[in-house]
Length: 117
Image 1 (tube, rainbow, N blue to C red):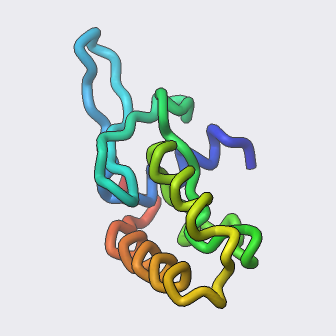
Image 2: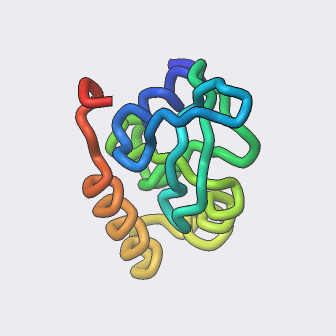
């Protein structure tokens, strides 16, 4: 699955994202970073605007998959910070495991069926 397709799949399954009209009259998807709730914008074609990144909640290095429940959108600042501080520690580190569980819970709470988007 390409990046743009993946971004749109995440947007469609994240209830914080909604289609909004921009100042120039076009439409974009606008939602929130999984970590800090800062505003994120994705073009309707799935192009990321500025600092949108795909977050693997359970890092791939710890066996995390590309399943949509394990993927979320995050601002680059938060995603990079998580990667530097936690991802390399793996699931055996208590703080990393606690953060991962908290993020999975948040992703589940934000879940929306793809057909509802």
